[in-house]
Length: 285
Ligand SMILES: C[S@@+](CC[C@H](N)C(=O)[O-])C[C@H]1O[C@@H](n2cnc3c(N)ncnc32)[C@H](O)[C@@H]1O
Image (cartoon, rainbow, N blue to C red; front, side, top):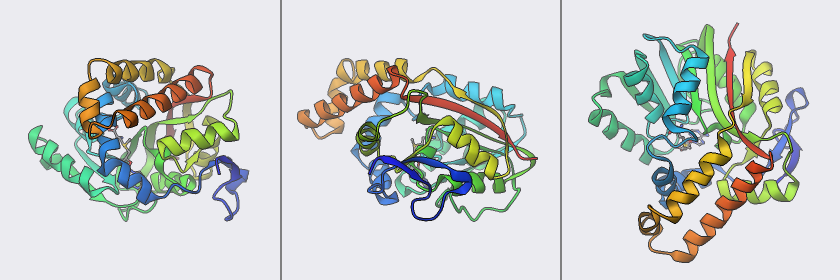
């Protein structure tokens, strides 16, 4: 149910962390989204970088996290590796490893690396981000963009991010989180079922998880980008990209209307301060 539970449900609550949990969403549910029409619809609305704010958000995250030219990084939930290509091409990062569980996204990512002439500097690994198997302290920074919301066991994800970076290294990510007004149980259930989010914390709950994982949180705040961007996507899908959206959904007009209705619901939650995109920067001591 989309109610607030100690997390992980039934396994005790590290540091008393509590967040919205929707137990019906599994990793298979999320993989099906990204391997199918829903994932293609998100890319149509948002572009190759499937996160709120696109390039501006990536530049902001890289700048505020102090990502340096020549560094090496790991992108957790990398999808097709748009974040890896951004960091290598536009920020002078030496090498990136993208980790994602959906094979279709990794295959597309490898093709796009060749297209953009960066295949020698990016590796794509199929794994769960809660246990990547990558070496400890093997990276200068860990990166994520609007994707950790899909991961069930967020405390385990925070621990894995902390494990992967060297001492003095950085964990930098943006994510969809609960806003200051808070979601009711019914709102959380409807929103998480539409988005396929298995658990959904607030900024302060993320702070606690990062702290418990041994990281020092330097920045954790609302970016203010959420609702204006959802307005933008609604305008594009309802107008200029309407035909493309219909084609993506197999010309199912009722389905497109239903998706647009849920996006309006999401936008209205954001306008009421119940959902935000947040930016986090934490260091490993
Ligand atoms: C919104 S997309 C990521 C977008 C990407 N960060 C960008 O900015 O373009 C979410 C991705 O997370 C991946 N994902 C979700 N849960 C995962 C998990 N537990 N382990 C690995 N990958 C996961 C999905 O396969 C999907 O490709």
